[in-house]
Amino acid sequence: MEKEQKVKKKVCIITTVHPPFDIRIFHKQAKTLLGFGYDVSLIATHNKEETIDGIKLIPLSTPENRFERMFLNNCKSLLLALKQNASIYHFHDPELLFVGLLLKVIFKKKVIYDSHEFYRELILYKEWIPKPYRIFYSKFFTFYEKSIYPKLDAVIGVLNEQAYLFPKVEYVALYNLPQKTMFENLNIKEKKYDLIYAGTLSRDRGLFEMLKIAKILKHQFKMTNLKFVLIGKFASKELEEEYNQYLKTYSLKDNIYFRGFKPYHESINLIAKSRLGLNLAEKSKNYDDSKPILATKIFEYMALKVPVFVTDFKCTMEFLNTPDYIYFVKNGEELKTAELIFNLLNNPEKLMFLGDKARNEFLEKYNWETESEKLFNLYEKLFVLR
Image (cartoon, rainbow, N blue to C red; front, top):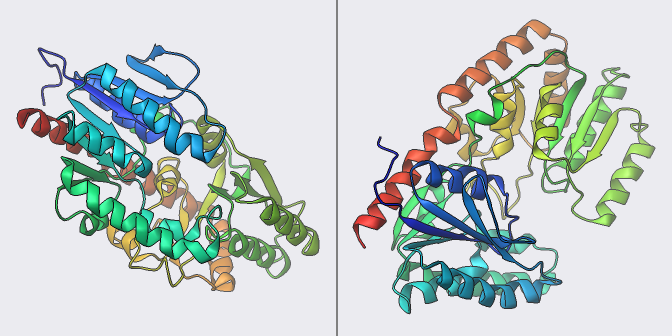
């Protein structure tokens, strides 16, 4: 593919929610477009206008509250976007749908909506929305999204399974896979930890299921020296207090190492020093096999030669074709999962074999570089249709 363009084509990426150096937005999409010869600007919350790695950052002020972010910053982002006079605008937050509509209908620009989540279902879990109003808000958002997206030029999602939500427009799934360049100089000298989890620490992400497994490993399987690392932020202060009480009740304080939120490179370093990874999101009546989930962290574990235990979501199993270096387990079967973990931790040769196999699969198939072609093709098509 020819990456050099004779005339640079200008694109403007907009986000009011994500940080400017978000992995998917800045390091994957913006840098990929720049590499293919596009002139790329990014409007995001930042402290000054500057150019980083060839990408022009257009700053939005940090909002003091949700109202300021969703309304004032939306207005500011529209004005800043128009100043860029780009040919294609690519926005990443559902609250920017109206901004995208104005850019398309009033100013006749090509517009892409990047939908990172199944927002219609995700709203049902938003703690800032009072429970009695969540269903109403979800239905309102569904109506709102359905009213606007058909007027845009394309929708980008993170899974093929999202396509049914956007039947009236061109849809492209860009799987949020890690970049090979982030894992090129892999040098793992030692494995200090038995287990690791990196991500939001919440009930629906399997926090207490993982703690139950740790309890079983220590007390039933006599792994008194178990070392389990947790990386991330607690979903709430109340949850953190419940977590601390659990550790105290079951004598796990010497076995669970809470590291808090870590920058990406530090998180990768901790994963690389671990023997097994966990990603045990809970299924529920509102988030079962009909609501697909494919966690990026799974592929980071693979890239770092770490076999992983994952909830048996249908989408994940089908996408990965159930390889032997990933153990698909059911919610609520903590004893069975703990036994599998115990046997694997006591078989270092098998751990090494599975880790090597996982990394090779990542390098060959499950990386961002394999996805970037789809982004390039979409942009080229939109420019041709101008």
